[in-house]
Length: 602
Image 1 (tube, one colour):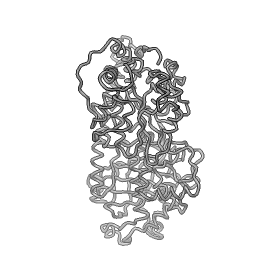
Image 2 (image 1 turned 180 degrees about the vertical axis):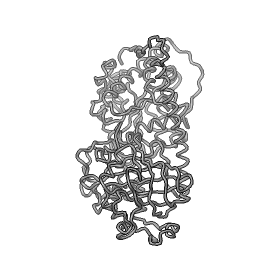
Image 3 (image 1 turned 180 degrees about the horizontal axis):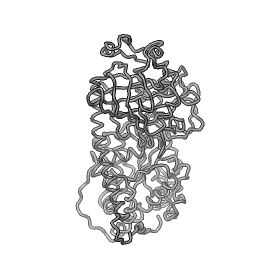
Image 4 (image 1 turned 120 degrees about the horizontal axis):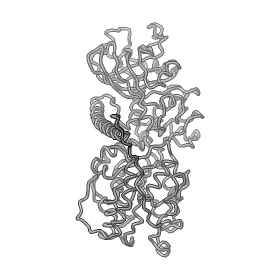
């Protein structure tokens, strides 16, 4: 490693004194930060309520209706079920509707709905909860809208939330599923905007239920037809007053495109995600062109991180993947496939191994433990000098290059997202630690860095450096040797973070503080998962203590993580620190404070 660098605290502006009562920029910024933190916390609690409400709705035989953070994958799966109910399974008409309208058939013919979709410019699928006293009440819900593209295929789904409506005859309705047939391009374009109201700027009528039904009912000119089911029964009513609001946060996070608009998605500017294969396959079957939306792609579509740029399929592959998409248990294996590998860069002793345990708990992730450490310490391109040439020549990783590790990370793991925990100092060249943020300081080329989704885990050096020193002097760490202050890792992590932010300005970077992870694990993990594009799993919060084979790579450093069952502070006796350790802590505190200024709010 290079000589230890000191890093001054980031500059701070001092507002000039003013007799004016106008709040200073610093005060304004402070209140904005407090307001943002309060808002973030409120969303955490709202999500908890939403999770409980959705579980209750599903248990009662309905569908999830409460929009929650990071739920796009669940919405896609739900909307496929709604579409299947209307177009494949078929629905029995609610007897109360037949008493009011005797001409409505006992069964809603799936052929009529399928025919309506074949002529549609777009569709909207959603679930909503009605509250209040009929015929006027309030409501909220969640779903997706999709558009037919010029080539006849279907667009990627855009997340929406329906709110505030009145329902004609739906006395006593609680949770209902709905399918909107958007029949004209003019009607579809209203969904390009942030908000659209049915019955306001967009007329709507209950969809036809039999041959000639539209003409007989006088609804052939209506730009939107609605089909509604509740408690498993078809309810032939129109939805009026329904306000659809674009869920731009979910769209931005899911498609890894900050600021993406519903219009961009519905015009085909976003690649169709593999997670929507089941829904797309069903729509293609309805259109009579199986696999079209799985095979074809608008040439001007932006590649999202959910779809490989080399999405080229032959007929045999297409048949297999179309078959997979129609099988729900196999389709679930695609739910998180083809996300970029997520690399969590950290400093030593930052609770990062416990963080790994959280992802090992999931069945949709493939976790790798510090793979770049092998070429960094032992390989022919090594940049860390802890071991002598003779020691490296005898190590099993003596021939491992950085490109070998990159290849293993990018290897396909069907149905799983690759999550890597590694150290910034393993890839940052010592001579480039102080390089400009515009210069790549790492051993990895830019095109490789772009293939990863980067996140960072930090911890105050008052704990991480002390823990590093303690592990070396108190544990059996094999041939690791003595404490080296230059391996604290903070300056390398800062150099890497600054460059990643400059290289990938459109991708949000998650910076997580170990202190937050220990004190508030659930909000912290929820916030992290939202930024990296993964759904949060409650299984990440606790686990059974057991030996993890991968953690044996660095003897003596992971005993706490091996024996842990969750995120908790390990109480230790006070340790007397030598001068070089104390100096290391003080030198790295300013760098930590800079990194901490970029951390997630949980």
